[in-house]
Length: 107
Image (tube, rainbow, N blue to C red; front, side, top):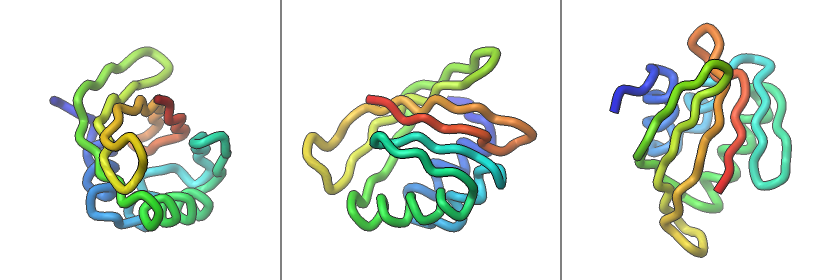
C-alpha cells in the first residue's frame, strides 16, 4: 500500500509508542477528534497520544487507504490492551504541506 510519507511516519511512531515523533506528524495548529474529545495543537496531541499509548498499548496495521479531494481515509486494524481488540478504525485526515492538519478517528 502506497501511503503518503506523513502517514507512514504516523504508523511507525504509533507502533514504536513515540508520542513526540507522533505529534511531529501534525501541524502546530492541528486538531484531533477521538473518543468524544478534541485536542488542539501539537502539545495537546502529544499528551493525548502519550496517555492513549500508556492505557491501550495500541499498534496499527494499515489495511486500506483512500485519497479524496478534501480528506484522506486510512483504515487500520488496531490491536492493544482494550476490550474488543483488534478492531478496525477509520482515520479521517486532512493533510497540508506534508503534515496532518486534522484527524478524526471513527469505528
